[in-house]
Length: 110
Image (cartoon, rainbow, N blue to C red; front, top):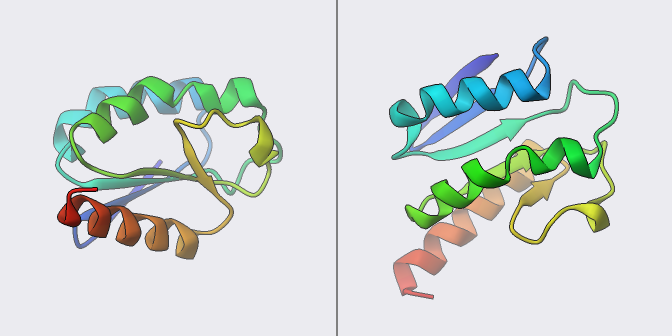
């Protein structure tokens, strides 16, 4: 797992650990990154299913409740199967765009 800080955004890139191990590690390290926007890059995985992505639901909901963005990057999942509570985009650039829009919405009180 690689952590890269870009301003108020942390990009977490999954490498060799399983998704379940990744989620557990993120939950353990969450206090360190709870005040940042989080991008989880899963681009190295061959295929993702709805069950795989749902593992991030609790962490995402907690983070969004704290008024921060949580975006998953993967082009290996059918977006139509992703729960509405999760934000999944195909590229890092789109993840940054989503975070920028969410920050503006929060600043406007929307």
